[in-house]
Each structure stands twice: as structure tokens, then as C-alpha cells.
Length: 206
Image (cartoon, rainbow, N blue to C red; front, side, top):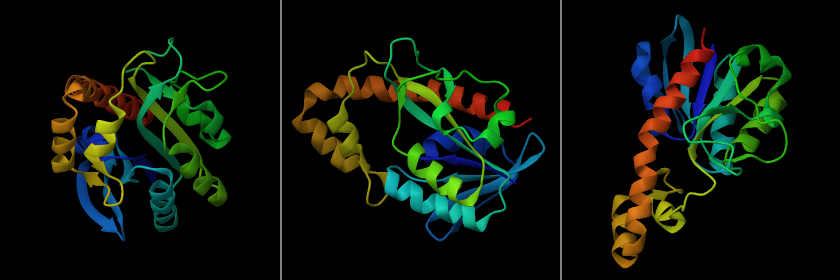
């Protein structure tokens, strides 16, 4: 079985819609969707945001399912101007040698720190400890010059409960109206980013 791991349901939604013979359930705190994609049996797992939650849920994923590879897919921010929005990259520093055949179609970050996310390092440690190959796939959701409404983003998501918090976001924006436009721009970019992410994941499952 192929593991497809995402931090958020929003990132996974495009792939979940394409699953055949789909089923949705939880393994303890881990939300899962199983089915087939391009004729391959897959499990889509929602690992949550943040290193601690992602590591805990990745442990459940690794211990519950017999996985031949885990593709950790999601959004990332660019740290260098060469990386443009909606392009797919594989984080070479966390790519397991055993997973390299899965990455036949890829663009690699060759050197240095070029993209940033919150979960890859934690998930990589879990999979390495269990000998499960990891392929970290990221799509650029924001470019290096973008102004990110970080406070609004923090207000929009309850990390403890791992779910969006619309009321807290609205209260924050009411007190900080200058963040409304940057937040709207950021959210507007997520639809195309998800389409690019779905396309990139699909291309790996051949």
C-alpha cells in the first residue's frame, strides 16, 4: 500500500475526490481515506499541522498500515526567488534513497535551504526509524517576496484541536483590518496550489 500523507484536509481534498472504492475512517486520532488511485491501493492520511502532531500521527500511520512508501505532500513557502508559486519540488535532503525510483518526474532543490514547512523533519524521523521510504513532495504556495499575514494565519487555525477557527479569525481581522487583504490574497492562492499538488501526486502514482 502507498501512503499519501498531508497536513491538512484542504491539501488532500483533490486526491481524495479521485479515489475509487473510497472509505473514510479514523485510526485513533488519525483521519484516513483508503481507496485506489491509478489502480494502486493507497491510504490518504491527515497528519495535522506542527511537528509534534505530525510525528504522533505519522507513527500511527506507519504502525497501522503495511506501507511500501510514504509520499508526504503539501504546501511550502519559498526561501529563494527562483522558486515560483504552484511549482512542485521534492525535498532532496529528506528523500529516502529507496524512494528515488518513485521520483522519476521531479524538480530537486539542489543545495541550501530553499523551501520551508513545519512537518517534514518530524515525519522523516518516524519513517526512517521504521525503514519506510519517504518522498517529501512540496508545492510552492507563497513566494519569497509575498507578505504573509502570519498573525491572521495563526488566528485562523486551532493547533490544539487541529481545525480551522473562523470565529477567532474574524475577531482578529476586526482588530487588525490591515491584514484582511494579505489574508485574502494568501487564501486565493491555495486553490491553484492544491490543483498543482494533486497533479504532482497523481503523476507519482503510475
